[in-house]
Length: 377
Image (tube, rainbow, N blue to C red; front, side, top):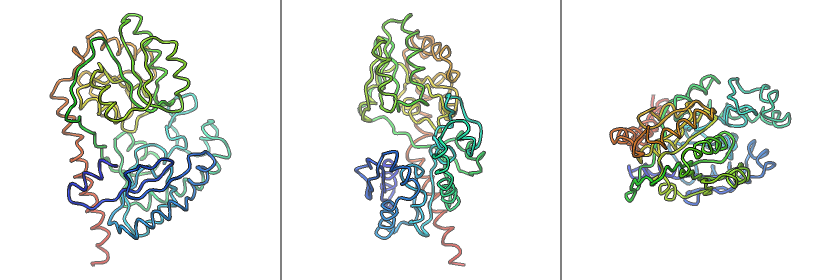
């Protein structure tokens, strides 16, 4: 959202960023701090008076022609969006939260859920009975907000299909990918070095990656794995890493630090168990010339070209992931740990911020024009 804001401003538009959450973006023009405690969120996700007031203030002072809404199903109560009044709203759904109470479309056993949300969410053990009951009116509010939107966007065909199955019609607009900084230089490490960047949570498949890496290291003892990110699995993974040579837990890194890790990586590993709604991290690696090893599901199947920009392996299969790691470590795939320049250039052209923002401007203009038509007739 910050990237889009600055690109829109560079194109001559007046833009304000409204952020809310336990740690709202310090660069936001309007911000509301909300609680991250489970009890508070249970209430605030239904109705959040402070966010509602903040939105009313933004509308009164800034007077927007169109509002782009993202991630509203978490800290912005869907009820709060009514504070926008008659301002046209474009919603960008970048995850499954609007159709799945746990947000991942994964069952407790980490297998994909193929059913629509409802009482099945309680029967399968995804949520408790109180949670399920609380969600009934909340998801009614989410549906109402989506119905009110002038347009609903989504970043991938994968998410588009999932939402369509749940009765939500969307238009696909891929996320913009930050290009390498001016000082970025690709210098693969002397020995095989794999990098993971992302949230440390169940759906991301990091324990699977560590298991596969341990197998690879038996044949290639100088191989290393560097894991960047934080999340609920951090303590568990620290225990695994303590017993595994060659693995480093780096914690959360800045974009500049992530780019430094990518500069030396032989491959970025994305072993997700869920169907990634888009998988931005894969493209961030590809536009920097870093091959990607990713699970063959979700958004990765749309952005990683097997054999050209990376390797796709059978999701959740440790043997398949191990084989892909060995292919890179041995130099069988992507000798020199590099992607052909033509594929890098194509990715940079397809997912550029300018292309994304150009399409957004056209969408906003159409939405604003359609809103004005009844009054002018």
